[in-house]
Length: 91
Image (cartoon, rainbow, N blue to C red; front, side, top):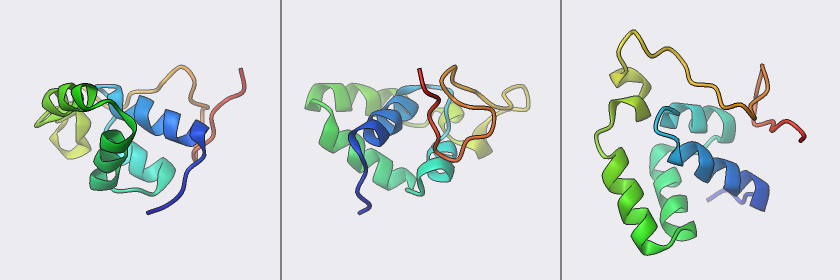
């Protein structure tokens, strides 16, 4: 599994936690699969928080780009740059 900095791990967890950010966006920015994202969440979160997150995203259409309806095009975090290839804007 790929090694990430603490800042990258925080961003992966933040993106996974957001309901409207699809797993495909995490794959694009960090090059990890949905399963790898789930493994990171399991490893980095408290067990109760992981179970709550997993229950919430299980089958959620907004977490998978192919399941989204036409009205949901893209979600952009306020900390994401206009063109992002895993670049978090400086604060």
